[in-house]
Length: 232
Image 1: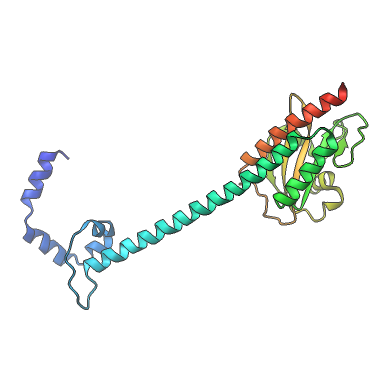
Image 2: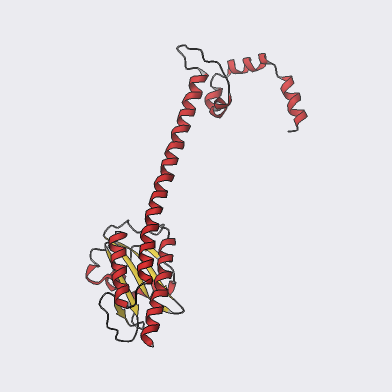
């Protein structure tokens, strides 16, 4: 509608027309509550709820919603800050690792203690008989049920099959109800990182995997470096 048309329509409607319309439509504002916040009506006390009181009620509701939203944002920011601090601590510890056993220890301490995982497993794919204590070495030709998880090259969260659970978590498998799995790749498939929870819904398919991807990238580079040093 053009400005001239709007002015012409406004001039054609009198105050009496507006008053008559509202008199015949007493529930008009209950159907158009957004208009109440824009009205400027003097407050007159009485038994019925005035427009000012209704406006105040709407503004109070909006204020409550904004406060709740702000509280959610603050809580999310605090959670992200804490997660960043733990992630930074884990990454710095990984960068200092010089052996495979040191990597295994850092992963176990960080994921099970700092990130409250109930179980963690670091599988290293190799045909060599590596002398390690804090991670498991698996022949890449014998991956069996975890082959789809490895071939995806992407982190995943949710419930594993019984066979996958048993392969990854070994004696802890009977207690693990959900897990996050991260393939470790640096030019080639190096291994698999898995974090298990005793709660069925702790890890789920709708969960974000940005953090897992970041951890996987850092861990893959550290593993590649240490393995390259062992080959020399």
